[in-house]
Image (cartoon, rainbow, N blue to C red; front, side, top):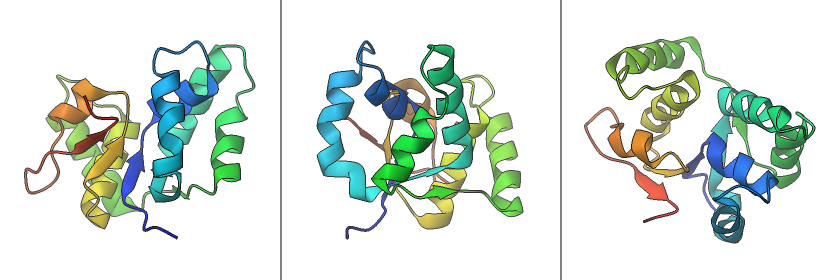
Length: 140
C-alpha cells in the first residue's frame, strides 16, 4: 500500500458525490491515482456531510464513501487544535475555516506537502510551518 501523503479536503469529496458539480469529472478521474494516498480529518468529513446533506442527498454519503474507500479519518489532538486556532487567526482574511486549519496543522505534524482540494485560493495562500507552499491536486 502507498504511503498516506496527500491530505483530502472537502471539495473533492463533495464533487465526487455530485455529478452536477463543476469539479466532478476532474475529481472522479483522479481517485485511481490518489485513493490509497489520501487521509483526512473529522472536520473535513463534518463539512462534507453538511454540504452533501444540503443538496438533498443523504448526509451520511461522504462518511460512507470514505469508509468504503478505506481513507483514514483523523481527529486532532489538543496541540494540533491549538495550532489550528492560531492558523485561523493568521489567515482570517482568506478566510480559513476549521477544516482547512486542521489539514494545515496535520500537514505540519505528518510532513505532508500535497492536498487534494478544489480550494485553490485557500491552499494557494496557506503555508506550512516553515513557509513551504502546498502542492495542489488537481494541478492547474
